Length: 295
Image (cartoon, rainbow, N blue to C red; front, side, top):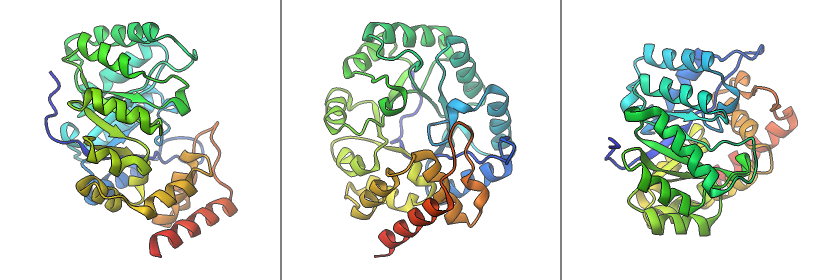
């Protein structure tokens, strides 16, 4: 059975720092994860979209998890691991690595190479994945992010998966930005851990049963997100800030904002095929968000 019975709260979708040669900067990553927890995040999520998880192979995943373990992170409480692979063998290896470290949960993206698969095809893929894990399968958060994967997860698929694998499915992270979908998901599955990826919909969703968020903006302003989750009250400044951020490629934009917050330009480097924002873009975005949050 899923073991996590506490309200989920806020998990920072941790951005991954890289050296100029593309290697993961473990010291910066550990420091950023620690800062997020110090600011009140209940956990950090590594290898998600903001963390460029689809670009991080097994050897780097092992190194990242080992660095967090050496730094004393409580994996069962404070680390969620993303799983993003189209090949079943790769997805299973990523998940087993996370479970071997005792991660609180895994965030499971659908297979994303073949577009527009049928619901039946997705049901079989997820079913084979969970069967492949056997008794180890637990605390799986299904990841609906069709803007990246081009593979939406219908509410009916969630229903079928939790009925077939009740011991494994913990919840759903919805990053579709589709409010009608979020409402339907919560109406059907409010007893699951429903998390919202679009910060502009977070307060609304909390008021009708969402348990929190896995959020890239938690790398920058976790305090505002925690307030939204705790009160269900909207934050107009956060809404405006997300609108501004979405004018740029999201992951490089978040990294530029972390670079600005820390005063450390090394944070701005993504892995190819992503490119960093230009100096002009990063400066304009940073200035705009400072104006929004200080007005």
